Image (tube, rainbow, N blue to C red):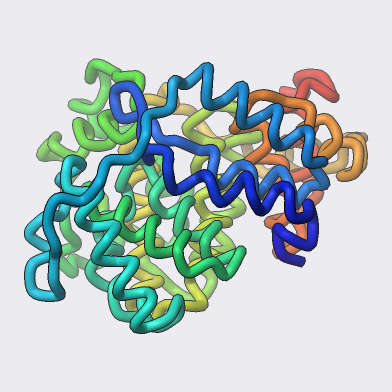
Length: 348
């Protein structure tokens, strides 16, 4: 069901306003509104709830108007602007033309191989915006997302092809926690800056090659991200859980090699946040199994509670956890969403 079918013409009009607002605001914090409004509509948010949320978000975050492009980029010049936030208007204009020319699927298949190594862009929020554009099958939203991805492109140390050390995503996080120079790094308010700083530590560079990517990797990453969030309820772990939902939405529009790159670099980015997470030890299988069997409200109640929230991450999690549970069948997704919303107590 599309956003228009879910919330009606009034909300479609609200979404039409989103391109006029900047992709980021103060200190490069990501503007979540274009994506969270879609999530809110999909969990049953009413038109008045969407308008109330956006009015609060716009005013609290002090959203900025989006700038106008001052020049034109071409297929031969757009990569010269990778990672230049000030070039986002030009990059947006370029991708609006390319998505119009190639269509959503064609543009993603053509450009994601180049963008995938920078999936850490804006701490995965450019990926988020792309995924929601794909979800709604909105060509302009996808083009805007690709422009944002290019403008905030964040390269982490490149894979070298060294032999992997494990096929277990959890083991990669545990091995990363043993990298002594990562301990004591100063932390920033922005996740992407913490990823950037961890990636600059020489001992971190091999991490990208540690994980063997296979047909089951996305599912195993999802299970690890869920356990990580269940055990910590940490903001960065929430992004691991939701980020895998976003990759799952985008991956049907990629070839296998591009999906593998996205998974590899995404997990490298999550490993780079181990300091932000406090170098946690993941809960063992017994604890995870106990938690997944805890009583928790049903999804209808969880979504109703999330629809009343002014916290964009409550809404994002409520939608992504519901979708990931539908994909993987693990009831722990419902438990962690209920815990995030304060509907059950701390089970740890």
